[in-house]
Image (cartoon, rainbow, N blue to C red; front, side):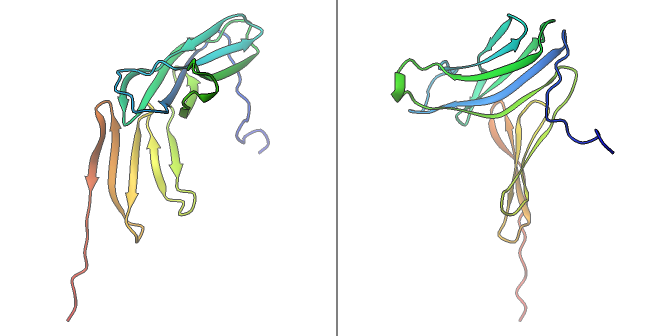
Length: 169
């Protein structure tokens, strides 16, 4: 069926609310702060003069802080441009800023994302509708033995299993 495959372009709908979600980590020394301030995500549009600048919000969880912002596509927009910015004023030697799990989707939609191990092809993580991850850990035999869930209070173990074979005489 032609046209039923994945579409590699984002069709903008003027007036539609969109959700931008991502995770950010600022490099350098461990931050003992409540929020990261040396990064932003900017959304701009071709054909429209409106720009949106977002900052991360919420708890820093194991060194990462989440972006979750809503914006409305301007009426004259024909294309979108997203910039992930390191705003550290230190110049060329500025600590790195890392962005991960970037997602952009309509406000009235849900999105789940899946991460697979590149060698074993086992499910390594699943990102839920709120862009929080569930991590899957396997033993040497490939049996799932632990599931951890990212929450606002950090990563918590959800389930853990162990098994052993009894020795035969």
